[in-house]
Length: 625
Image (cartoon, rainbow, N blue to C red; front, side):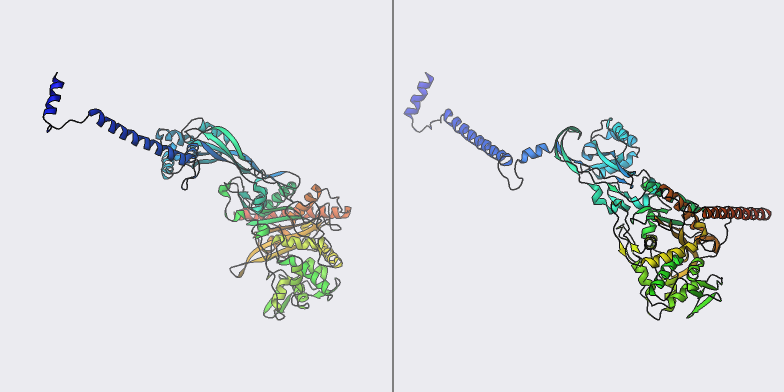
């Protein structure tokens, strides 16, 4: 009724505005909202498709899938097993053992500060230091907590279930023979890379190639499951060295004793196989234990026999005689007049350390180690006759071992007018060389004039070698070296009971800051058995203590050579060649020497006790050579 009356009023008064239909307005809004929402849905679907299905210039394919998997899937490194280093008989010298390394995700670990004290205590470190490190690495996802732990110790920490703490397997290098072979074998760093010695020289050969695998991890970073192997690790190759560990222990023991008995500062000892050129033992003292890197530093790291150069002194005299014989100007029966015990060359007076040996033939000139005789011989040869011979024998050249830091030494080129220099090189001065070079040179004499390359690794077939000197000359010099260890020679303490020995003593004053001092380097180099030498060995003692003759090569180095040569040849199963007369002579000499040393020691002790002086040991004096 009301509606009909209102309608009539509108019809009778057209000026009154008609109201819009409410239903018509609602539909317009509805369709507008539905349209906007529909557009947003299509935009969202398109964006997801662009990220996950379609190529994207900025983020690549399957962006969302990759980002999602990154929170759970990880590629982990599989460390390669480093090759084993052994001696020539298979005895292990360097092996790798599995160890555990703890690491943390600082982003995760920092969310559990209440566990810091517990973790620090388990690691045995200061809590404040650990927290400081975590703060510095707060933006990172990786930080080492402790490397190369014992696996059982690491597992105890993992059992604490601290968020963000993880473990991975690494390899740690272990050296069973310790300091006995450290200078040759060397060591690796904490990342298992070669840092010294053969570990460094053959690092690529030993290292192998790391692999990788894909693993599934939980939100705390712990491995839940290994999913797939991406790349298998390739183990490094093994390395067999030339040394015989039995001989190496023998050499180290005797060298250490010789250095300590003479109160020297250092020493080196090398044993070479004449037939193959392989180094059967090479050791230095003092040494270091590669299993304890904390004390492996400074001079203890040097393989002195290969890297250090020195002036050898009288061990060069037989090599100079070799050049004299080859020149044709001298024969082994020739004599040299050394009267009156001094020889003036220019402004320099050359002496035989206060002795006047008179007239000497060439073998006795070597046996007595006469500087005057060698000088007169050198001055009758061409200017570079001696240095050319030294060079052919390997002096002044690398030995071919490719050992890190190997020194090549130096042999001078002389002019005709350099008379004093020619004399100096005749008795082992004015040049620099290594112990290994001297051993190689003497191996040429022992091998009948054939020079073979030196090898620190085991070789299956001995190289043919190069003939650098005629055998008739090397045989003559070898016979002269027999006189050195005879009763009149300077090296009689080098004789062994079971084998014949030939060799030469050497004593050289050290040059420090361009000036010669009273400090000495004393040595002995020899070969045995003489008729068919199997080994050449050299002992060098740096700065043995004693007044002149008590510290020469015949006193401090020759006895060590004797012990090493005797025992080494027995270990190598070389048949003894000494005659009964020789055996009795050596035994009698040893007994006399021991009695004389005991008598002198008792006399000195009684004298010192009477004077209330400290007791010191005494050694029998010999002419300094």
